[in-house]
Length: 115
Length: 115
View 1 (cartoon, helix red, strand yellow):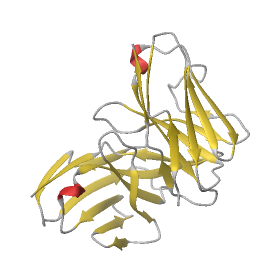
View 2 (tube, rainbow over the protein chains, first blue to last red):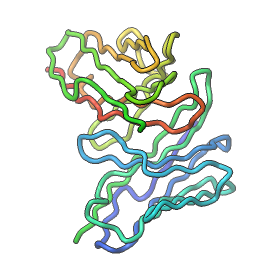
View 3 (cartoon, helix red, strand yellow):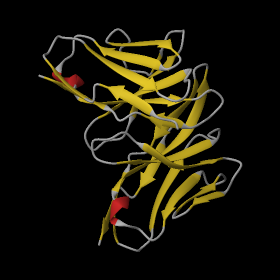
View 4 (cartoon, chains in turn cyan, red):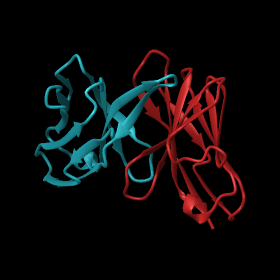
């Protein structure tokens, strides 16, 4: 069935290093791939997204790449800072029904940035 | 922009009682809102899609008679957990999507504890 795999589940980096989180999806019809950052006890916050007609998108220290052929997409955070520490979720739009496009989420990556 | 609020932020109730959670889009109209449930250290699981003016669409395995959803206006959706039991204790999060856009913006979540 529809599935989104996310790796790694945990990631520890030193401040200033880069962090990369990877996701794969199963439905070739997916056309929208957002990334969310969730801090403890809070709702997810949209940090960047990419549509299937684009291969890469960048917003300051954050970038996302998409390989439609391989059905995987990645989040890249450069010059990491302690405040980047959080759980990051990837998601994919895996179907469109009469209600609109739903999102299926990966299992999350806990990023820890130590100073 | 794109602010979604939830109320209450946390609620403790006795087993067998019902609890209502509100989700509001504050600065945009949302014809579609989504309700998710998140258990500790796990990902977000879509429960149902809430459509303004029509019945909600529930995901497989989610009891529609237990989780009542009402989307009475373009800015408000409510989730009522009826006859709550301890296993319903979880973090409930809503998201809202503006018509014509893919982006989903999440509320801050509601922590439900059933004693």
